[in-house]
Image (cartoon, rainbow, N blue to C red):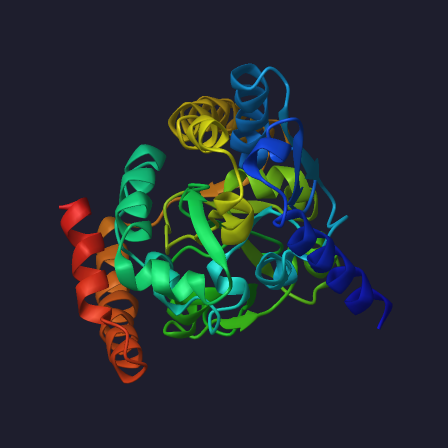
Length: 338
């Protein structure tokens, strides 16, 4: 109840703020940004965005980036955006698939995204599709920019898998399309929050967990593990930055321009920071003497045909049943990749 009152109070305050003129906002604007964890490569585009906004508005437009779920739990960020509890947030599609079904096309397994730069291009194409914008508008949310994530891979404890079939019966921390893909080879996907993953591996609740390298580093999963898959690449999650539509519309035009024009440079900075992450990750694997498991190409191709394409078709059928142009969205993603 206390949490609900807090969110409603914030929403009321924001609504009252919209009654003022654009000129009033031009004096000083601070947006609250809800993220989780600590500052890391995954949030560096937000930090760069804040820096650029300050430069372009003489310090009048600022972001208060609240880490550690200080404003909201990670799975509730879209709800917070919808009522105006804060103006900006990172979300992940797989945290609430029913609330943003159009975004989940980007979490289908084995799409074959080669690098983060390409992921940004694919994300931006999808984010501009009318069906996707309509989907997010239900939550009063406007898609601002991507948080491109590398392909996930697994760290684990115990005997390292030598073949894909060795995951059969293994309890794994895997969300969204990755979890569904792992089910096809007999793994047992288990929902564990990022913050709980180290303890889950250490205690044996799960034997392995899938993350992008930055998250393995951030949550120190490698300290509870002794092996890492270098090329399983079952997929990734999609975690865009969204903003409250009313908050955006209330900005003076020059502040909107400052925000929109800063996205590309913020993402370029993000990519540069991720290069550092990869360097740190492989150095850590060597230092910790983590066994690096590389699967045979033919095995991975068979895995893709078994776990990828049937799930793509099932996703299309599910979206069509909801009145969402599933095939059109999947074709858009594949056309950008091809």
